Length: 297
Length: 318
Image 1: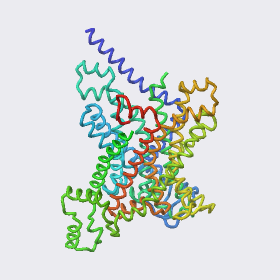
Image 2: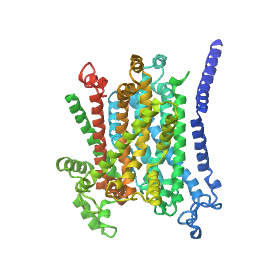
Image 3: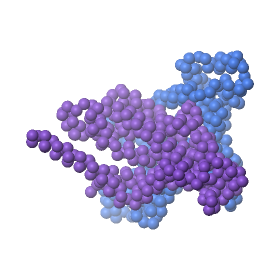
Image 4: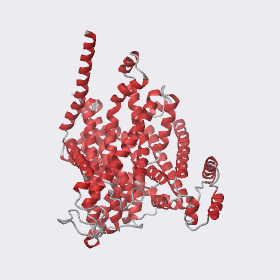
């Protein structure tokens, strides 16, 4: 009877501790002004992406030749493009595409990177060697160039862009995961877990993974921003999302011929990209500081 | 040291072979029929079949890979473009120097501007200069390079008319492309230099030097800077890869006939031998730069040098 009560008590304190850890990180994050600003900006863009159909004043694909090339005014806050499409509505839908590409590809590389990195780091031996040499090969091709080769192999389209960006990121995430696992592997609490007869999967999932999570989270947060930027540059040169899809890079590609006459057409999608990437960088920086136990007092 | 250099060069060979196999395989699974790309939509099935036969596209994957590798290693032959029929090697010889000069100068520019910025920020920590540099660095890492290039064109060619918007020629044609590609590098270097410098400044030997009465200038430039520079070399070699990617986009924007434009056009035209050759050349260039940086670190960092030339950790890779 007392035994079960004790176990219950221990479980309760463990739960409380877990909760407080998240709260602790959130609290430290809230002290960082940059991170708060970044977080709010990112949330706003995310909301804009989700509620684009409700927020957009016009249909993003509606062509209205009479109203073409209108500078920003009250009816069209961001102006209209060379086909009379409302740029604000297109920018709002663009947030959707960019978010899907950024988050989708990061989730893809995180899932596969973590699994592959965990296998390499935890089991070691020839498998580790093989995986790491494969990562060497992938990482010896500069990121954007590998992405272009992958996009070429997979063909155009949003799903393929996500796949290309995701595959490219696997090597980096796997390497990071492996090195964190190697750090954790020497820890005594793993010996303790092993002596208490934990299986490999349980050790990896319950003991190793939570302790390697922080660097992956920081890398992924910043990764979303850099993927959005990469996808936009690929779309700009015609290898990514194709116009007339209102992805920000494709919008830029679509309006580059009007750069001199109607600069706002090119400026607005670029500013959108910059705001999102800036927000994610601020948030990532803040997360790194908040999660770093060395700064804990 | 000589043994270490040789070992590192030998270790690069399997990586390069891996890159070739990877890129070749990617182009194999790419959609589209090369025979149709060469002959056009109007060709009959028999003509396409004959073309496939003559290109050896009907052979098994491994035979094609072997042929590609042996052409590449023994004759330095990347095959010919499907569209123009011109040898990829010949075209590369023409284009590669431009891309290399472009990428190297933007890396040099980012080092020349980024390092002093980072040092100033670290030495005057929490001052206006520090906040200014870090603010700039934050904006710089969030700025899409190709968009920055467009803004530069809009301002310096459109509004002011100082610089030509595209094409190649004298030095004035290179200013905007190099600045737009280097901008991200400048901010990366400044950030890295600042954090490296801050770490070094708070170490004991700097306190020791100050206590000895060494002048402040001398403490910073002779004691702190060389130690803080070493991690920057690694970052610089990594950011060379970003530069190579950046040149690819910038070449398209500024119409510079380099490897980048060649690859981008080839992807849009499904001209696979060109994509294959271009990606391999850029990847090998990147590997060589990484190797040179590693060797540079081994040569100048006594700690790494000691690991290589003496002690139990002989020959251990850094």
